[in-house]
Amino acid sequence: MFDAIAARYDFLNHFLSAGLDTRWRTRAIRELGLAPEARVLDVCTGTADLAIAARAAADGVQVVGVDFSAAMLTIGRQKVRARHCDRGVFLVRGDATRVPVRDGWADAATIGFGIRNVAEPELALRELARVVKPGGRLAILEFGEPRIPGIRTLYRWYFQHLLPRVGRVVSKHDSAYSYLPASVGAFPPPDRFAAIMAAHGFSGVRAVPLSFGIVYLYVATRR
Ligand SMILES: C[S@@+](CC[C@H](N)C(=O)[O-])C[C@H]1O[C@@H](n2cnc3c(N)ncnc32)[C@H](O)[C@@H]1O
Image 1 (tube, helix red, strand yellow):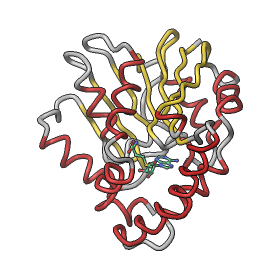
Image 2: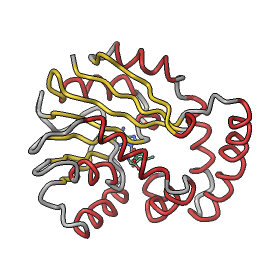
Image 3: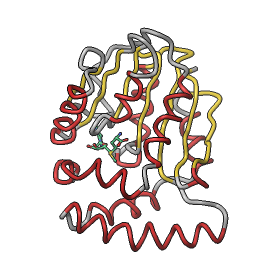
Image 4: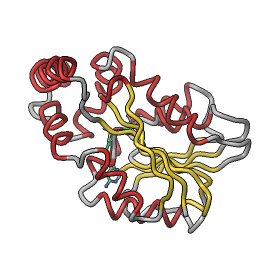
């Protein structure tokens, strides 16, 4: 699916979120508190927006981005080259549950809107716990649902009706943008997902609502 929509993915991200996606990623990277020369693993890196943002956070940051969609990575590599960060961002094709990085390599890890897509998210969390060194940071962005009743009703209409139609027309893919609200609906609620993170090697887990809870930023420290 991601191979099929890769060409329109970035445009639709920015258009359908009215540009908020850039702010959500910036906020996630800020939570990592990256020092110069820090090493970051970005799982489900897609077209590498989060990887590129991590690279820009401090001097000499090294980022490995992993994704199993070749087409998403191709666009990511073009962006990495265009932004002259190919010395610090390395994109690798691979699975979130078997990352080609040694134990304790990373000072921090990120997943942007990807954990919901992984068939076995617990396995991916276990893999991140292996790769992130004790005391290292984890930031995960994932869609949620606003809690304020009026905003929630409006957002549901947008997310479940308007967004799939616009997504279908622009991406020319029949189901990708219907899959989005369906997969968000199937994802655990924030407190449950925070508990899953805590059960897989991370402490001090916080679930921070962004933009009224349209998105949650989960932050934690490797035990
Ligand atoms: C919604 S995109 C997010 C891309 C990017 N992180 C962002 O913030 O825009 C989800 C990505 O997760 C990748 N993905 C899903 N399951 C995966 C897995 N098990 N291993 C590696 N990548 C996976 C998809 O190929 C896709 O590129």
